[in-house]
Figure 1 (spheres, one colour):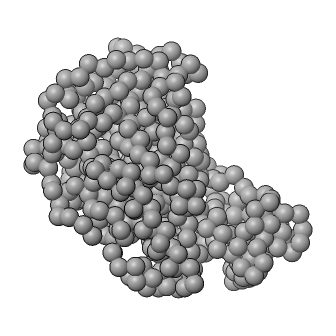
Figure 2 (figure 1 turned 90 degrees about the vertical axis):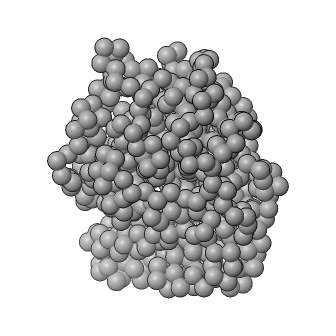
Figure 3 (figure 1 turned 45 degrees about the vertical axis):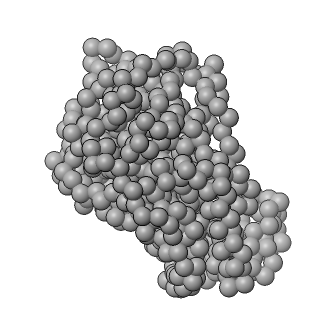
Length: 512
């Protein structure tokens, strides 16, 4: 969940997913009518869709349309916004079961092109039974996109805590909140996960379906869980991949990433010590650890030339946090940086293991503000759970100092000041997920964006769920992204409705 586009796509090996790291007094909650959660406004559910080709490069069978939804479901007669959806029809009319909505993560991940994304290898058996439905969530991409006019520096939230720069970081957080409020103050309270779930239910109704099935990654697992909580009778087969703990949304989610990074770092030191002759970083875990922190100290004194980019120690910490979950890639990168710090050929930055999501189809829709990724991420994260964000900057200072000591690799970056400290709260309280809806949760053991404990938390909240853990699995995203042992369980569930009889653990291919 770190909020630059580098990790904003919380789906790994290619098909966009994200649990952003975008990470806080205001008015009282104005909750919509109780009926809103269970009944979509009638005029919206009776829309007639105008399908058109999404773009010239996509298959002619891949079609896009726009669905109108209310900005505020408590005021369905008020302002409307657009939700862009796409459809790839089931390849077998005889076997067709219904629709499978796809979400790549975020908040802020565009999903309009997911049905035809080459990186997302959905099995043919699933494609025969389901219309694949992509969509850009409200405020994202082609769906009335939010822009705050943020500069590139203002979009960067990787801000390590330092006493000398904290005042500037507080000013940055306030500026981001003020710019978004000035640009779209009336919209911000309604850019929430609950309202995106309501949008999904309007899409369901417009498509003429009694229920939806769903495949969501990263943040998409939380969105799916919220939909299941709000609309349990309209929930069919839900696969939740690389899961976030709904009880930790949002601030604790980022802090959990820092905790998970320390476990991954410890594992990496052990793996690398066994390969000292290859990487020359030490033949014991303690020596490997010392080599890394020596590199950090040297880079803080004199930044390391990384292929033309000068990296400080803080920059290295930020870059390598997700990489440590991929032990081989991390060992290679640290060895390169160590050589560069010693005056050898500059080390080029690696391609990050977490891939960014692709752009929305160009021929359909509107121009997207350049800061849309960051703007919508902050909007959702801050409006979803305003009460989890302290409003006192000194609380963030104390937490950053505490967590830097607890989790040296990333604790201060996760816990320091964020724009949510100065954000107006959302239109209603967040969602407590606690239900018996059936679902299948897939999780790599070593996931940098949504660590394993978060998936276990979602499993506890969804009492009817089963969980498949890929022991030794590295990276963010499981289903359709690699040849995973978990894929068979997901495909069987989507095509037959049968969950595993019990939770399963299987081993990753080539597990080191």
